[in-house]
Image 1 (cartoon, rainbow, N blue to C red):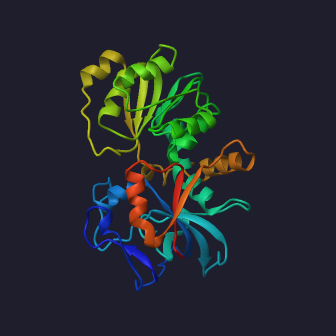
Image 2: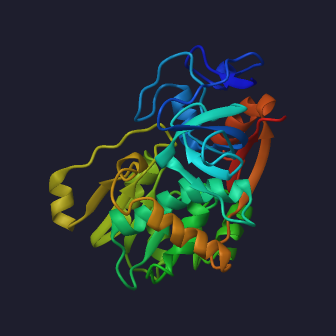
Length: 321
C-alpha cells in the first residue's frame, strides 16, 4: 500500500511517500480501515521531530486519526472515524475497536475528523479543564485553527460571556469574528496582555485556551483575572515556559495542562461528548471549517503550510492522491 514513512526524525523533508508498505493486519480487538481521509494535526509536526509528549520509534507512519470504511468483521462496509495513535498517513490503518465511531449520515470525512479530535479537545478544554463558569470571559488563541474554530463557537453555548480570539492575519481574524468571537486580536502586537484586556472592556480575562507557548503563554498569564485559568494544550512555538508558585498564589491563577489521551479511557470522556458535538453539527449550531485537502504526495507541503501558519480549519490527506 501507499503510505508516508519517516525513517529519521527531523523537518518536513523526512516525510517520504513509499509505494510498497505492508498492509497492516488487525489483531484481536482491532478493525482494519480503508482510509479515505487522514487528519493532519499540529502534533504531527512534533511527532515528526520526536518532540511530542509521546515518543516514537522508527520507521514511523505518522497520523493519529482517520476516516474511512471498515473492511471485515461485524462493521464491514461502515463509514467510521477512528483514533489510531500512529499509522494514519496511509491507504489502510488499524484501530482499536473502542476507538472507532460511526460517521453520521450526511457528515463529510473532514467534518467527522474535526469533531473526533479537535472537537473532543475543545469540549474537554471547557468542561474538564477550565470548568468554564456562566458569564466568564474566554480567550481562544489560534482561533482560526482546527481546535480554535470549534472552541470559538462552543464558548457561548457552554456559558461564556465575552469571547476574544487571536489570529495572525486579518483574514483569520475575520473568520473568528464570523464564527462568533466578540473581538479578534493580532497575537504579534507588542503588548498582547494589554490588547486582551482592552478587547475585554479593560477587564482581565477569566479563561485562556492556549496552544502556542513562549511569549504568548506569558502574555496570556499576565492578562488573567484573579481566579482565572490558563489551559495549555499545545506548544506550537517550541518554546517552553516557567511558572512560579508564588506568582500563581499572589494572583490566584490556575495553569492547567491538557492532553486528550488522558480522557479517552475515562467514563463519559468520548462517546457522550461526541454525541453532543455531532448533534450540534446536525442542528447547524456548530460549523466545521474544512481547510485544504492534500494528497499523500503533498504531505511535505502540508506540514510546511501548517507550521508557517498559512492554513485555517481542519486539514486532511487524501490517500488516493
